Length: 205
Image (tube, rainbow, N blue to C red):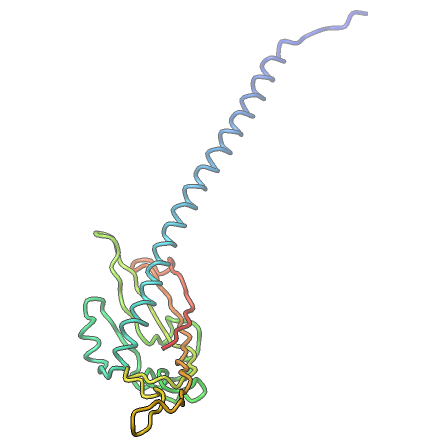
């Protein structure tokens, strides 16, 4: 009995298998390249929003709060910062947040005053410009906790060491304790609020 030998299809099958393996490798490479591009773009967008949040924290702590302590009215403050479309929350509540401990905030602040969502009843909101021809960023800031200190907020340092009639230092030197505020900040893309970054800031004044 003679065995029948037929190997005419082996080369074709081998070629097809090699083609499939090659296509699989190419598809995997394309997938990783595409995902890498998407991740890089996402990281870039997040970095831009995060920088806007940092900028918003600087504006609120270095510009808005000091002027409120200097006696600026909210209307004057809004006029001074019209370029960034500054909007302030309830002025009575904001004054309580700046001067009273958290437990003493009254009805003017409402139920949302202590919630950590900066976009919910913010104390201040404004718009920071992006790159030329690019949309800007909306920033929301809110004080959610206050620990009052004993430092003089007027800038005259009334708690300096006491002096006698002759002007000689008596040695009484009260310890200066600044007020400490916990501030929640949220920055988001002006045209796409889903692109956002949140910060928690501890600010001593």
